[in-house]
Length: 102
Image (tube, rainbow, N blue to C red; front, side, top):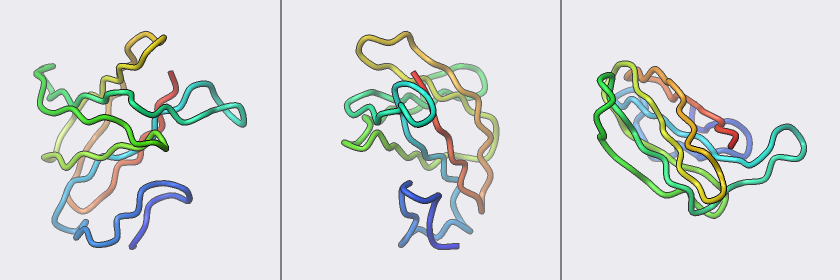
């Protein structure tokens, strides 16, 4: 498999068989009214809630982390929105796709 979901981040050039990838998109709203949120921050928290990493979303609202196997929490911080936490399971050899609505 060489790509993510349609319109998502490409995994071309990433050996996903050797990586645990968590990626997705932050949007404001839901359904057909959802719009990408650029400049939001997505934090990666470990199973104990400890901060591990943080990335800004791209112009299209996308983000990506390379994580270890296990349970993680994504905390999204964006202007004019309450923080949103989403649990996600990472596993070597797979790409966990997450859509976060704020």
